[in-house]
Image (tube, rainbow, N blue to C red):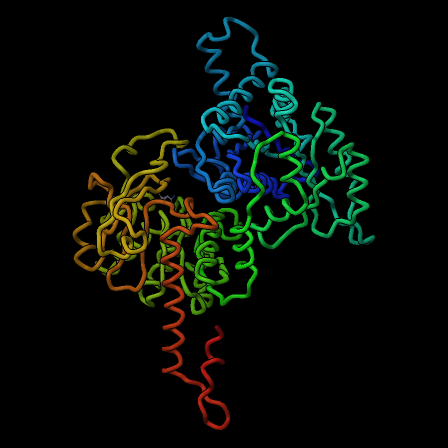
Length: 561
Ligand code: GLN
């Protein structure tokens, strides 16, 4: 019998409900319990694929090519599982399905209503994820906060689940926030009390309350929440904001949540083994030399837009004993001659995925800097296309080479539309999406990084390297090191005469895990370490500064590591 854990949010959004759901997954997995996770998003969009990164952050892509909420990235990274389309359900999808059934006549002329038709469809989606994953536990997170009008059908469906599958098989967790009042220097539990009251008005009585706060939570506050919200003392789990995202499972475990869930749901599990995870946190906390990586994009003021890229960098940093510091560089600024002062201090440059013309020239300039200064460069999807365009411009000596995405009339369409993308009217879900195989060419940097000759990676793009230009760029030192098994599509490009300049048409960042960094990020991180060491050695030879006695300064002062 599958057990269900339902997470709802209260008081405010953005308190890390997704990370909490993911962390609960990890502490259950540490007991040998199989877990899957699902996000129910109450907005009307059919999927986040067409939503602006400004509003929604990164679009996370699953193996089966679903464009999903970024919380799925947390679930996959924390629990180390691969999720599918079924793990992200929106109001838009639910209504589309119900309306399609109504048009087909499946309801035999009945009146279609929110209860039971919409709620039944939501429950069908929850059961579907349980059945397809055969997990012991399904963790279901509802987006938004209690009180949102659009969230009501989802909460009603969760309420019904309790009697559908039995109270012993459901566990409701309400994640709230305790605001800190600066003037009186105290945390407040009242909004949590109100939020739980609202939830109970809907018919959901939480089994546990996770109280998020930016300050330590005194015991009396825990007591108060337990009393006013009518839950056991051990059901109130304090979760104080941590700088280290991956420490949340340890925090929840320490607060006893794992044992409480296991007991309440009557789950069979072994004693929790989080030793690997604890070792990883110890390594994250240990002071380490810095790796300063520039991420050049157009949504850099909103770091969530590049969440998986940032996380993949941190994973590789931990493996190579480096603290990664990201310099967020706005590609639009580079076009105006601003932001270049950052570049001298960078150990590596990443141009991540993106769409549209805005800021593209700045990204091409960043790729040029990386090529000319032999700075490690990793191009992700658009970043690979940018790298190829830049190299073509260098070869032909003009800035005419381009992608037809940015200049439909370019005389050098280095990147062009894939044949099956011509004439498409629908923008949603019509890209080349999800996992595809890729053959690596032996002896290349890519093959060396993966230590394999066949890989599978996740895609999300419309444009593609134009095969008409394979010869031209290859003659000048570009190596096409990853190709689709049918030989049609260039998947990885790298520069022969550069210590590490690699671009992939896919998104490796989606497959990186904290305990298993992605091979390309791993190799990139190593290249940045080598570059930093070389660079400092060179600097030392060229301009060894001397102290007042004319003696060279000791190396230890020059190299901060
Ligand atoms: N805009 C480019 C394309 O559609 C790159 C997409 C991406 O970076 N995800 O091909």
